[in-house]
Length: 259
Image 1 (spheres, rainbow, N blue to C red):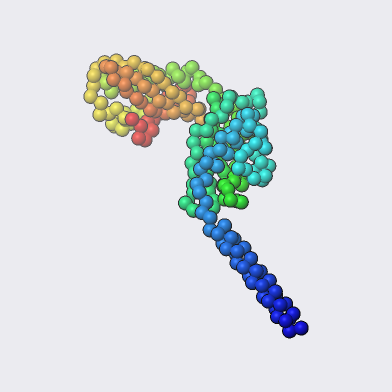
Image 2: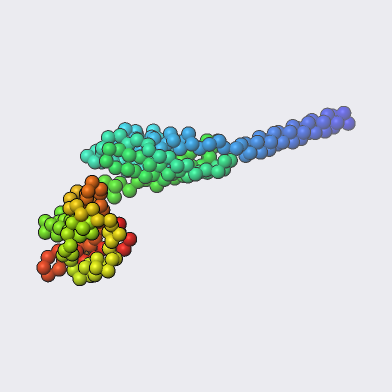
């Protein structure tokens, strides 16, 4: 009976020792896996970004997005309508924000087709031993694909008044004429008191030629103008504002800091 009890005690001790050893192995494996340092998320971010841009233009299926969680596939379920597509979207920029050794990163993705630019924001986490995109902010396709607002062309009378003032003003400062250009009183005072952009011009006494004229949108009866003139072979830029007065469009002032 004593010998049997000794054998049972030995068997029990052996079982306990095996259990302790197994637990130690499990703990060691868990500790080792928790100390794995993630590598760079750049390859996963690049692969996902290219595939997602392809999904937007209809060339890649949603379930084919690599390194993406199911949550991301549920968020990115809006494509560019076929009628609004302008060819394949190519990746033009991928700005990755990641601290070496960290298990998470963010990226700003830019892509372009022939007509539009698309911005995508992604979050990437190290999950299950690999990098996966677990959150995405898709591009606002409604805003991106909206047709441009129609800006009515400026009236011919406005272009004529702006062209005349720009040419006559440059001619006055270049000494080609001694007559002040027609303008509202505030503008004339600026010129007469030397508060205009060409006051320090060395006269060439050559007449100016209008090369280009750009008019801003009309707002509350006023508009900004930028003219480029050529005088004696040199370009002369002039910026000024016009106002719709009782007698028609007239120049009323130079903006502060204009050339």
